[in-house]
Structures are given as structure tokens and as C-alpha cells.
Amino acid sequence: MMNSTLPQIAMIYTNAPSELVEFLPESLDIHYYSSVKKLKKALRSNTPEKIFFHVNDAQSESDSIEIVDYVRTALASHSSTLVIFVSDTVSTTPSQIMNKADVDDVIRLNKEDTTFVQRKIARIIKRIIINKKHLMEKDAQVNMLTSVNRFSHQRQNIQALIASYAEALLQFCGGHSGLVVTPAKVTSVQTSQPSISQSQLDTVDDDTKQYIINLALQCKAPVVNLSPELEPMQALIEILPSPVASYLVFPLIVYNNNLASIICFISEDALDSVSTTQLNVMRDASLQLKIILERRFAESRMATHYQRLKETLAELQTTQNHLIHAEKMASVGHMAAGIAHEINNPLAFVISNFDPLDHYVETLISMVDLHEQLIQSINEIEQPVNQKLTQSIQNFKQTSDIDFVTEDIKALVHDSKEGLLRVRDIISDLGSYSRKESLENQLLNLSEVTSETVRMLKYELSDEVEVQLLIDSDIQITSHKGFIQQILANLVKNAIQAHTTSDKQTQQKIIKVEVTEKTEFVLINVSDNAGGIPEKSRKHVFDPFFTTKDVGKGTGMGLSVCSNLAKKMHGTLTLAPMEESNDLDTTFTLKLPKQVGDE
Image (cartoon, rainbow, N blue to C red; front, side, top):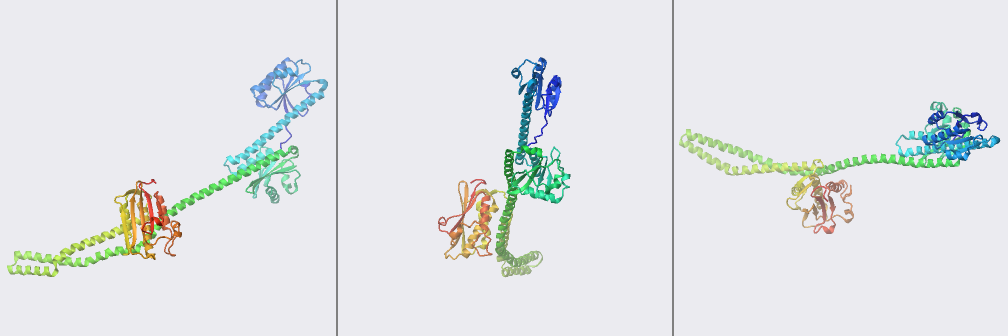
């Protein structure tokens, strides 16, 4: 819908303007040129839609053909309409001129039929106006659709894109003023043409603005109101630069919600170009905008959700690491009482050794004193006195059992040393197990790691339970010591607790820890004969928070954490089927690669 009032400007090359006056429309804005150089200069700065040439002699014919060639070739203008007027006095026919020059038409100025010539020129001018109008409509349509595409390809602020699109839409529909309406406010569309300013719009009363908001946001598709009710918005109409005969409402719909609406006000002289085709173009643009905006909003929400998921994953990873350590510390807490008892045993006999040691030391000191007196008396005292001292030494040696003291003191010192070393080993094992270690791998002797872990749990074993260690000697792997210890400790503790709570009557309670070496991996099997895990529970043993223990007796996280630790070491932790446990009831298998990254 373009404005039909277009400027009718024409350039005419002629050396006799008076001969043309009676043939040309009065509405035509004519610029006459009689110099080829001046006309070329004018054409370089502005090439109009209409250029006429007046041929009334041989020279004007030659000049006209030269200028036509200049326009088509040098200026490469093929959109300008070039028409040659041939006077009756020239013998050259229109067809001959058409063969020489690339013009759109050649008209013979027949003074005997002036009306015919006038009509023909008028038709040419009208055709030029119509073509120009269609071209402007196409440009406006392309500009509007380009503005639609900017929503998809540009990551500008939505408000800026809507303002740019509103300006293109206003041009396309031939409106003289426009508004962008949202539920919160009304904004003026700023264009290169005179329009309502934002400061003028701010003077409109709130009731009028609310009426405009309600009017705009109730539309769900583009609509042109040809018989509008203008009275409720009279305060706005009065400050518009041109009268209003109609208005267009163009809503921007996102998920069935009106994000904003654009109102374009159209004057009377622009209504004659309203067409169904152009309204359909706007409806197509509205649908395309809806799709683009919904996709853009979806992408924005997806980006937000992705960031939240990324942050949540990081938090879960941190929580998992804390949970692994918490599970380990929970095991340490459970072992604390037993470890205290285990430490007390060697401490008790070490402390008890010091009473006899104290007595033995006093005895030895006394014995040494007597020997010193004997040695001194040999040099200073008479023989009877020597004999008396010698007899005293013999009597003291017999009564104090010096030979036993000498032998037993060595045993006491040895036992005390062994007890203290045992205390050191227990504390060292506990510290190594409970320490929060990094995810660094190291070369390990699997036999030592396994023996150390089982030894640490010795305090939980009753005399009724026998732990059998079947380990190939000198198995070397590169893995994480702390993780392996935590998994083994958890599996052995579970086996111990299974024997404690089992109703199965068995002659001998067995826990078997078997380590075997394969070509690229090692297998650690922890088995027991405590009756097995019920079939309905076997598929859930690695689920977080699943436990068969009484409330308050277990968290259900032990095996879940162990399974995750195995995966961190690129291995697996599995529960073997009952038929594969041989003579035992339950077998857990930890499979680890010899080198990190191996399958």
C-alpha cells in the first residue's frame, strides 16, 4: 500500500521548447536542456524516470542518439524511460530512429492530431508512474521481509528489532505515523518522514493510551480497519502530522501471547492502493515472525536451562565427591570403637610390661652396686671381707633370680616394641583410609593393598568368621589406592555384617578375598557363605539409598558409591549370579584395568 502521489519530473533535451508545450501535461515538472554537456552533467547526479528528446533537425537527432547511448551505456541505466519526439519537419521516420537508439518509444508530433499525441504521452507517463509505484512497493516489501529475517540472524535487543521492523512495515503500508504498543507502554515509530515524536506522544492522556493498548493487544492477526472509530483516540489523532482515514494493526504473537503490536495510521490518499495481496504478504510475514520469535525464545530458554544444568552437574559432581568421602568417613566412624579396642590391646600389655621392667631395673642396679663393692674390696679390704661380699652377691643373685630377669627383660622390651609398632600400623592404616585423596593414580602392589585393608578390619571379625586370602603374588597395577581400599573395606564389612545377621546354619563362616591376574586386567572377588542376597533385591544392590538393613542401620549408599568409584578407575563392580558363586552364596567382583584407560 504505497502513496499514489508521486513526483512527475522529466528532463527534456530540445532546442525549441515552445514546439512541445501544447503536447505535454501541465502537471509534469519539466527541466529543459539545450546543451549536451549540461544534460550529461545533470544525469550523472540524478537520473530521472523520464527523459524526452526533441528531434527537429539532423543535429538534434545526432545529439539525442548520443545522449541515449550515454544513459544506457555509460550510466548503465535501463530503468529510465527514454522517449524521442520527432517533429513533422523531420523526414526520418520513428522506425528508423528506433533502429539507431535504444529508446522505449518514438512519437511523431502531429499538430493536426494534437489530442492523439497528448493521450499517447499521457499513457507513457502513467505507465512510468505505475511501474515506479510497483517498484517502490517491491522495495518496501523486500525491506519489510528483510526486517523479519533480522529477527532470526541478528542477536540484537528484541525491542530494537521490533522498532526497525515497525519502520519497514510503516513504509510498506503507506502509513504516515506508527506506534509500537506493549502491555506496559506506547512508543512512537521514528522514521525519516515527518511523524509523531515521543515527546508529543507523552502529552496524550492515560485513558487514550489505555484504549490504544487494549485495541492493539486484542488482535491476533494483521488487520486493516477501513472504517475506524477514531473518537476514543481523538487526543492522539490531533497531534498526528496527517489526517487518518484508516489504520493497520500488526500483532507479534509468541506462544499465543501478544508480545507487542504495531499500529500504522494511513491517510485518505493512500487508501486507493490497499490490496488483498499486500495484506496476505503481511499475514505471511506475521506467521514467519511468530515462528522465528518462538524459536528464538525457545533457544533463549534452552540456553538458560543448559547453563542451569551445567551448574547443577558441577554441583552434583562436587556433591558426589563429598558423598564418597562422607561414606568413607562413615565407615571410619563405625570402625572407631573397634579400632580403639584394637589399639588398647597392645597399649595395655605395653603399659603392663613397665611394672616388672621397673623392678628388674632396680634389681640390676643393686646387682651392679654389689659388684662395684666387690671390686673395690678386692683392692682395699682383707680376705674375710671379700668372701663375705662374694657370698652376699651369690645370695642376692639367687633370691632375685637374676638370670630370669636378664632373659625376661629382653622379652619385655621386644613385646613392648611390637605393641607400639602395632599401634603405629593401625593409626597409619586408618589415616590412609580416611584421607580425602586426589584422583591421582600410582603403581600399586595389589597384594599389599588387599592385605592392609583386610588387616584394618580385623577388629570387626569374630572368632567364628574365617577370612581366606587367595592372592597371586606381586600383582602390579596402576590405579587409585584409596578407592580400591574403600571398595574392599565396604565389601568385607558387608560380608561380616551378613554373617552377623544371617539365620543360615553353617559349620564354618567364611569370607574369601581372591585376587587373580589376567592379560589386561585383574579381578578381585569378595565372597561369603552367609546365605546370599534375595533375588528380588539383587537387581537393586547398586541403587542409591537401597538397603535391606533396619532403619538407622545403613544409608544404602555404600555399594552405589563403590560402583561409582570403580567407574572412576575405568573398571566395574558387579554382583555375580548365584550359580557362579561356587560353594559360596554371594560374590562381588571388582574388575580393574592394569593401566588406566584399558578396558
